[in-house]
Image: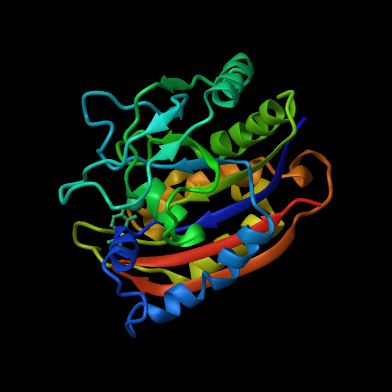
Length: 284
Ligand code: DHB
Ligand code: FE
């Protein structure tokens, strides 16, 4: 059977991707940030997933105000790198896993979560920056990736509770796939940031760190936090953090299993306009 073995959480700031692509990782501004991901790069070499179920948000690259799916699962065999205005990032194409993605869609939709099926889904920095942070600059990404896009851009956005429950449904779906696969689930975006308006530049380190504490220790309680608190405390784009609850909901302890082990916790301010958070939780 397929198994979810770990969850990974990370911010996806586009300037991080540009820093790697332009060879700036050793510059004083960036060095401390990339040092925080050294552990992750070794860890993923030691614990290579067959598939990453990558929860992220599209930033008006694949979708626009014309069409706004709340949850979209990428079922294609390949995903192009989106052109976000400066040409596509120079990173390898993303290869999907149509058989598993379709199985998850079948299972999760029959479990009452209405997913949109995306057979064509150019992927933007929301997906490629986490891959870069974990894998660096390989010729090919060493695993299959199932992109799972969540609308956190245009209101109304899904609640933390809905995301947490969806994570549980994704775990059930993966565990009912009849093939031996090591699957990781990644929750991306955040942490506190606001890119526009009077509060542009907002960062709330205290709230972010409480979020990390609660994500580890009390995810069910954290899932009750209403979206308005994310916006008030973590800025208008801080709402991206609800996506972390999808990944956390897929861990074993949520359904009575053992607590996950915290393999890495990292927090860094700032990267561009954003507080960067990163966690690795391994299931036991
Ligand atoms: C920034 C952060 C984001 O999450 C994003 O999608 C775009 C920009 C930033 O901090 O610059
Ligand atoms: Fe973003």
